[in-house]
Image (cartoon, rainbow, N blue to C red):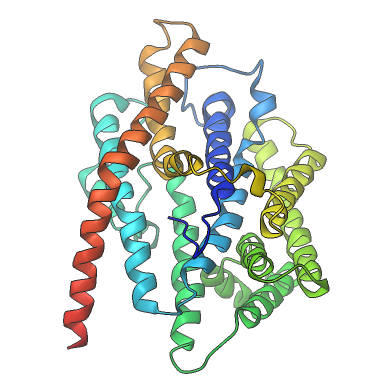
Length: 358
């Protein structure tokens, strides 16, 4: 959850929800039918409009860099571990269980799942064990966990011995990201990329820079660093289009991709410069809380709903009702389940760490 000493930045809750919704539209109206025989609903008449919705993930990563920087101001690794586990796992566990049961009961023949797969997915480290994700959207959590463990975790550990400014983290990580553009084929950089996610790092670095601007001011240094992260982001985003065009048998405009990524940077810059305070409404918190469960539960469960009900009703009605159902379920999870389980888990982890210190 996003907190700030004086004022919560509610605009980020809105942007996070819109990013999640764009991914939902991408999956339901384009990706599901276009490849891998995931969905029986053909929205090719409008799918071209929503095929860029996958870029919502890039916005997630920028926001993640910003929000995590807010959460590590105390530079306490214990506080960071407790906050991340209690924030991420409760909703994730319930989402994995929900998706597992839906796939088990209604998924065949397009979707199958095993008990071992379910149990190992609960760890959130199934990719290290070469176990398939129960839902493909979990791949972003793998990226996020690397950011938390290998970047932020390492940064906090170093700060136990020597006070290191965030700017130094930015300089070193960004330097490696630039070098990766030229030396990605070298074995050394393949190893570095595995741990430091250099093909995605520009978004997280941009988020950290936006936080630095937010707590200070926009200057030439941060403007230059943002420009570098932006061009790295564009390079990687456009480089992926060839593979996507082959997979989905359609074209992706680099101009649209560049424009959307630019809009993400611009929105976060406006937030950082406190230019969007006019829309800093408290009720946006409720919308922001829907984001995580909505993202985790919508894809395979939605496809299974489509595949079981598509012959009984109009496809537009079906997809609309499914989106509404996913949002309502996310509301229930975020309002009635997550606070209780998260607070309980947080209290138990604090007790565990206090006992370990004795």
